[in-house]
Image 1 (cartoon, rainbow, N blue to C red):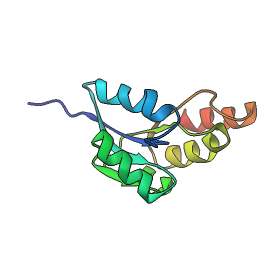
Image 2: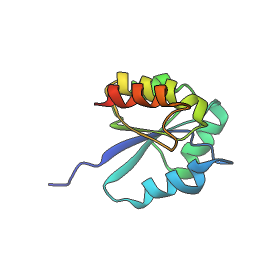
Image 3: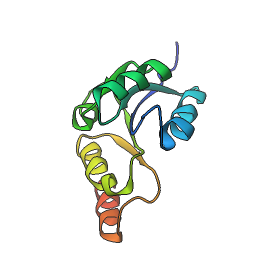
Image 4: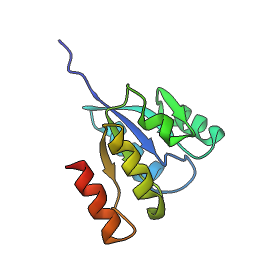
Length: 119
């Protein structure tokens, strides 16, 4: 019986810039226990381009729709720090496991709130 892969959705998967295409997306694709299920960017066009380039099953330009999708197990938040809190909290409230790139929050209060909810 084949092992089920962990289905990952990445917020901040723009093909042109940022850590997503340089680090996070290649890392997920290289790990056999993970499956890149969804990519999310701020615009439908860049989300579709990311889906095509990296072979994801789904593309979103609304992170709230992505984090609530039942076929995603883990959400990676790899956007600019001011957006970490809002997106991470949405994913946690949707019951997802979350990886948020460093630094976790824009300040200690945000980081503590996210960590408390994750626990």
